[in-house]
Amino acid sequence: MIRGAALACALLFAPLLIGTINQTKAFFAGRRGPPLLQPYFDLWKLLRKGAVYSRTTTWVFRAGPIVGLAATIGAAALVPLGGLPAALAFEGDLLVAAGLLALARFFTVIAALDTGSAFEGMGASREVQFSALAEPALFLAFAALARATGALSLTEIYGRISVAAWMQSGPSFALVAAALGVVFLTENARIPVDDPNTHLELTMIHEVMVLDHGGPDFGFVQYGAALKMWVLGSLLVGILIPVRSGRWWLDGAAALEGMFWVAVGVGIVESVMARLRLLRVPQMLVGAGALCVLAIVLGMK
Amino acid sequence: MTDLLLVAVVLTNFVLLGSSRLAACIRVAAAQGILVGVMPLILYHDAVSVRTALIAAAGITLKGIVFPWLFFRALRDVDVTREVEPFVGYTVSILIGVGAVAGSFWLGSRLVVPRPVPSAFVIPVAFSVIFIGLFLIVSRKTAISQALGYLVMENGIFAFGVSLALEEPFLVELGVLLDVFAATFLMGIMVFHISREFDHIDVGRLASLKDWTTRRYKS
Image 1 (cartoon, rainbow over the protein chains, first blue to last red):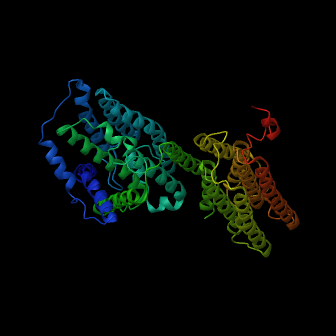
Image 2: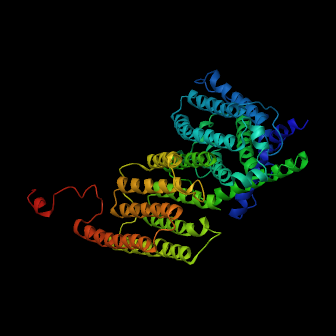
Image 3: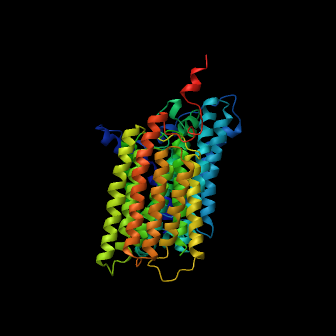
């Protein structure tokens, strides 16, 4: 019963993250902004539309959003929400979760390439370049966490990050949280890596890959993106909010509040920073990997 | 607390490796100097003597205030703000920094220390600062960055000395600091003269022997 809570929260509240980010940005800009539930209205609208498929595309183009969403839901089933256990847990499920996210990304990329347009190809190339650097950082972060907590399953690892664990290996957790923050911004295509609102060639990465999808496909893509943000956000919140009281409603409430503040934090970062030069993004990702290596080395007393 | 200080020192290392803006590098090196200067007070926080406090104060003043002031003065005279692209690119520099940290942790585990150290991390972190300072000297093209690498190396030597040999004579420690002070001062003067003579401080171009007399004969 409790095992399904994390997955249910993910499926229900993921678009709310996007709504919160947009509201925060609007607040910083002095606007009223779209309503908090706007992403839900958008999804409802998209699901009722029809789709137009180009004659140059094949089954890969149709499969891209579906496989992407399915893989992301699979990853959401494996990732715990703070103290709440994930729906599925077994040894080594951190590799499976990272692999499912990579599968989703792969299918998005090949669906983009399938359109035969140079624009999508450019976005696919940039996306793959950045994730080639972000994936090692993610795996190193997992390795540091596994080393610090002595467990190999995501639910176990995050279950052991309590206040006592922070007292013992605080610097390691702080470094891993910083690195996961950078990976979060990169994988979800937020500023400083990518601008989710822009539609100019110079600055598009994720937006351009899904430019040709429409109707329900685009709805799947949007929902999958929100779910991916929830998954990576819960990885971050699990480290930053060490509330493990054992009572599921307390842990769940603390984790949900943590997700809210992560969304507000992303909105603040998007409002105060500009996008980095594309040359700088690999350096930032390598820096994140270096922080994780430092966290691993610190754990080896 | 010691661990936090040492992690901060290693992080300043990485910022120095990855940053191209000279003013930012000087400030980060100053911050690293202050962290290293505070180290005697934190490592031996249960037995702080007048000597320890004096060494810490001398370290903080020289590394945090005097050396950056000398560097900024040299920077102003030379009128250079950004580093030219170094021999080793910034991303590879960060990777080499990670390798240096890993290597110095391995080295620290092999080292046999004569007396117990306050924390197991101090010697590896000191080694990593020395290696990264040396790497900065070797891989950077601007003369000021090379002088900064020398300063970082001295930070590492100070940290190593503080962790192991706090009972060394006061005169030796002061002598080392005075040596670095004089070297930095002279390096500032030299950089100014290099810049005035050659119109740049790119050491990669300093090896060319052409000067204005040769250019006159090209028609």
